[in-house]
Structures are given as C-alpha cells and as structure tokens.
Image (cartoon, rainbow over all chains, first blue to last red):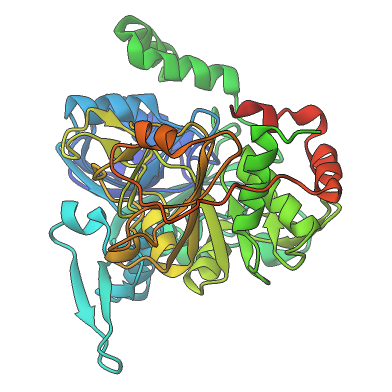
Length: 263
Length: 232
C-alpha cells in the first residue's frame, strides 16, 4: 500500500504534550525537514527523546520542549551544542532526563518489545541515578545481582530520516551507521520516515532496516537532513552549522536565522 | 635523542593498552589514538581499532569490519573494550565528569552529557588522558559523576595519563596514586596542579621514553610530531 504523505500532514498528527523520538545521532542524519516543520508549528510541551544534536538545540531554543530525554547533545565538529548549553544554563528546559546513552537504547527496546523495563549495569553508581530519582533497581531472581531497571521509553511519534525509501515503508540507510532509527520506529505508536529519494538502491536488502510493519507514513524530502550529514548523498554543511552555533550568543542573529532557515 | 613530553605521553597511552589482548580499544582524541596505534604495532597486536565512525580498520588502515553504535554497545556491555576518555573533572576517587559544571539542575557550564561514561566504567577497563594537568580538572569531588571510580563500582580504572605523569587509583581507600612521573616532572609540581593530595610511594619511577623501534613507528604514525607537539 502506498503510504506516501507530506511533512505538514505528519506534523498535523503531533499534538501538544506528545512524546516525540527523533532519530539520527548528534549532527548526523537528523530528520531536519521534520524538525524545521515542528519548530515552525505551534506545537508545545513536547517530550523529546534524542541522541541529541541540533534538533535538541533548536526545539529547546524555541521553547517547544517541556522534557528532554538524552544521553548527550553534540554537533560533532562542534562538540558542545551551544543552544542546548544556553537553555540548560538559563534553566529554560522545564524537565531534563539525562541517561547513559546506552540506557536510551534499552528504553527504546523495552518500549518496542512491550516490556516495562530492561535491566542493565550501565548507570549504576553514577549520578545519573541521583538526578533521576525515579530510576529504580531490581534484584536478579537467579543471582540476586542488583541491576538498573531502565523504564520503557514509549513514544507517541518517531521521526527519522533515511537515505532511500519505497512508497510502502521499506527504508534504507546508505551511510556508515543505522544509529537507532529502527528502534525509534519500533518504540512509537506512529512512525514517520523522510527520505532523500523515493526508490530503493541496489538489490541487497541488508541496509533496509525499516520495513512497512514499523512505519505509518513516508515523505520524500531531498536534503531533509541538512545541515547535518547524510552520506553518501552529502556531508555536513559546516558553514551553516557554524552560523547556527554562533547565533546562540547573538539574539538578533538567532531571530534572523529562524526567519530565514525556518521559512 | 631526548624524548619529548609528547613522546612520553604517546608511550604512556600505549602502555595503558598493554595486555589488552583481543579487546577493542576506543581512544578519544589524537594522543590516545596515537598510543593505541603504537600499542597495536608493537606489544598489543590483537587489539581492534576503528576509524572512530563505524568501520574496523586493519594495520594498513583498510576496512576490515563493521562497528556501528549498536555493535559498540554489544562490545562494551560484554566487556570486550578498553576506552580512553577525556575528562572535564576527575576526582581523588576516580570519578569523572563530562556532564556539567556546577549544580546539575541549573549548571554553570553545560558540557556534553553523561554519554557512555556510566556504562563504560562499570563494564570494561577505562583510562583517561588529560593533556594539561591542573587543579580545575583534578578536583576533590566531581560536580557530577558521569564515569564512576573504583569505590562506586568501576570495572577497572586502568590509569590516567597527563603531561606530568601516569596515575592510578590504588592509593589508600582506592584514591589517586602516582604510578610514574614524566622526566623533569616533580611531585611538587603534581601537588600544585592537583586539588587534592596525591598518594606517592617510595621512589616514584620515571615514565619511560620510546625505544628506537617505537620512535620510528611514532614518526611514521605522527609525521613531524604534530600530535606529540600538542602537549607540553
């Protein structure tokens, strides 16, 4: 079945207060076409779950985020994300959930598999436990070992950007790493894939990590990850990323950036 | 030829990976990476290195395997890894901070976030490289424990390499201890550049410089000493 849709139609499915998972990693293959549309919309009070990059910085700077769930936020070539830093240092993100980055993956897997939690050692002993007092540990019924129970990170909506997709919802990454985009989709009630181009490449299906059972809509969005990288189609637009980063120190430049880049 | 402080640091980073057998070594930063490549070229030939993205590279830097992030987690949770990370703060107990400076609820300086440090430190050997040993990094207590030290359940904090020496956490009560001082560095210098007292036992050894073979390999891996020249 053809499930091709549009960016605006996807944003229409997102409501105030929803939990939105955003795929990619740092400043790599982020679904920026979706992020721009979400930033432009009047949606608010979102919980955003992300291996954070400019998606986190932009949505926090625009006050869209009520709760941010992350393991890190980085622009890669600019290690510290300046808009995220500014929001944290000004205290403008109402709720912040900082996990070990592996915990994030386990939370997504638990949600995908319909489990209330998954156990791990990652996080034990660290201040991740202290700043997230809701985190609990469990005792292994076999060995009595104490383990951290990472709660399921159930998403209302997942947004990911892939290299290619077909109209049915098969989608492939052509770059070096699938990241956790498949798990974002599996953890979500509704998952939407934007892609550089409609039409799958080649005959080897091992890069098709997303299939129709996991997807509610596909959008063709060439350049839809820019300014983050989307190899092999394009690298990161470092000049634009530098300009974006510099706006964190200059409100007038930020206003101009928002006006130009989000319009 | 006298070894430079960069040569000494490269050897000290390499020595951190001695005996790592078939582990994947993940060096964060140029100097740890240089040390890891030297270790593989000499006394730790079985360690696995990647390009830092998702490809395993062989000795000739040719693609030999796939290591996407999901496989990195599989590798690290199974203990088959030794990471050498940086640190914005390290305390006397070997806890490390890369999350935030000040009160975490509203930080004075927001850093990267915990990233993989909590999981790394409890699952497999971890070392640190600090290019400029100073009291802003070496603090009595970290503002936020991203990576945990031995008393909070670390698997193994192998060592900390700085521009002054090599340290571990086998001092009294699992606190920081000098393992060796680099040539020219003194305990007084270390004390002045550290925000807590560092344990030292007897005659502290001097960190070794490269052998002739290692010096040649370092020059091949770091032509002109660009990486080695970055520490002083």
